[in-house]
Image (cartoon, rainbow, N blue to C red; front, side, top):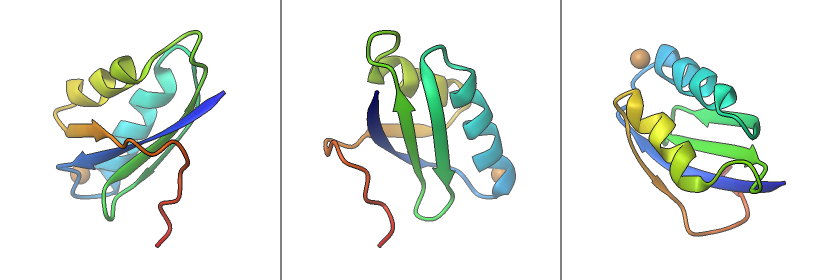
Length: 79
Ligand SMILES: [Cu+2]
């Protein structure tokens, strides 16, 4: 399992985070997804043998949000 964090922009309320989270958890190979409204991040635990970062990213893009994977491997988004 691998963790990746994405910056997600365009989310404005809890409905947005909820739909991103639902979409991510439907992606085959994603074990867990945590979406935070402020500052707009999605942290995804996934199986790299079944899905890659680009596929996860496109699942977010399909909802209309702009996203970019963070280069850092470890998730430490709780400033
Ligand atoms: Cu919203």
